[in-house]
Length: 51
Image (cartoon, rainbow, N blue to C red):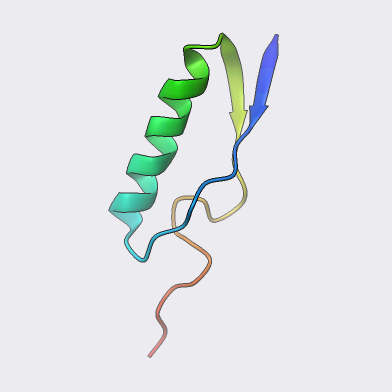
Protein backbone atom coordinates (compact mmCIF):
# COMPACT_ATOMS: atom_id res chain seq x y z
CA UNK A 1 0.00 0.00 0.00
CA UNK A 2 1.33 3.43 -0.95
CA UNK A 3 0.68 6.41 1.31
CA UNK A 4 1.41 10.06 0.50
CA UNK A 5 1.86 12.93 2.91
CA UNK A 6 0.70 16.09 1.13
CA UNK A 7 1.63 19.64 2.03
CA UNK A 8 -0.27 22.16 -0.07
CA UNK A 9 -0.33 25.93 -0.35
CA UNK A 10 -3.18 27.59 1.52
CA UNK A 11 -5.61 30.06 0.00
CA UNK A 12 -7.98 32.62 1.49
CA UNK A 13 -10.91 30.84 -0.20
CA UNK A 14 -12.19 27.40 0.81
CA UNK A 15 -13.08 26.59 -2.82
CA UNK A 16 -9.46 27.20 -3.85
CA UNK A 17 -8.18 25.00 -1.01
CA UNK A 18 -10.59 22.23 -2.09
CA UNK A 19 -9.37 22.46 -5.68
CA UNK A 20 -5.75 22.21 -4.51
CA UNK A 21 -6.50 19.14 -2.37
CA UNK A 22 -8.45 17.43 -5.17
CA UNK A 23 -5.65 18.14 -7.66
CA UNK A 24 -3.12 16.69 -5.21
CA UNK A 25 -5.20 13.54 -4.75
CA UNK A 26 -5.46 13.08 -8.52
CA UNK A 27 -1.71 13.58 -8.93
CA UNK A 28 -0.67 11.05 -6.26
CA UNK A 29 -3.32 8.55 -7.38
CA UNK A 30 -1.53 8.36 -10.74
CA UNK A 31 1.49 7.05 -8.80
CA UNK A 32 -0.60 4.32 -7.17
CA UNK A 33 -1.16 6.06 -3.84
CA UNK A 34 -4.15 4.66 -1.94
CA UNK A 35 -4.09 6.96 1.09
CA UNK A 36 -3.28 10.68 0.97
CA UNK A 37 -2.68 12.51 4.25
CA UNK A 38 -3.23 16.26 4.52
CA UNK A 39 -2.65 18.63 7.44
CA UNK A 40 -5.54 19.71 9.58
CA UNK A 41 -7.34 22.70 8.10
CA UNK A 42 -6.09 21.83 4.59
CA UNK A 43 -9.59 22.59 3.28
CA UNK A 44 -10.44 25.59 5.41
CA UNK A 45 -6.98 27.16 5.61
CA UNK A 46 -5.00 28.22 8.67
CA UNK A 47 -5.16 31.95 8.10
CA UNK A 48 -8.81 32.82 7.97
CA UNK A 49 -9.57 36.53 7.87
CA UNK A 50 -11.02 37.47 11.22
CA UNK A 51 -12.86 40.75 11.74
